[in-house]
Length: 165
Ligand SMILES: [Zn+2]
Ligand SMILES: [Zn+2]
Ligand SMILES: [Zn+2]
Image (cartoon, rainbow, N blue to C red; front, side):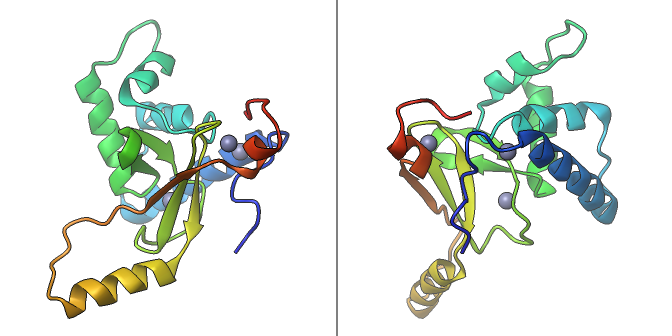
């Protein structure tokens, strides 16, 4: 388990972006998903920080030659990114964040959300998923959705009142 799920504020975020975009191109090629310029721009907006963004924040930040994209178009693009696993929905905040972890399925991950800086990080936690699976299976409960989101304060926010980037 890495101790730096939330990167230090002074980290080289450019390399996070570069790495995630490279990985996005690989995943899209593998899954035969077209990473159009517009889809990539939406992904880049999400990648601009480690924070989750609501659909309207995404629209505001999108640079599309002065044109404002309709919410429905943005939601369609987000759906493509979600189903390709390039981004995830943050259910508790009705927002979206880019995936910066390398994992095949979301069914082994916990999502940590910092209430101080609003950053989001994913942590590998197969045991938590295993415990849920064994409880639900043994009681014959059919799961439609499992949401594992943990709210709190990241180590950087606990150390300082300065907002992290
Ligand atoms: Zn970063
Ligand atoms: Zn992820
Ligand atoms: Zn924080």
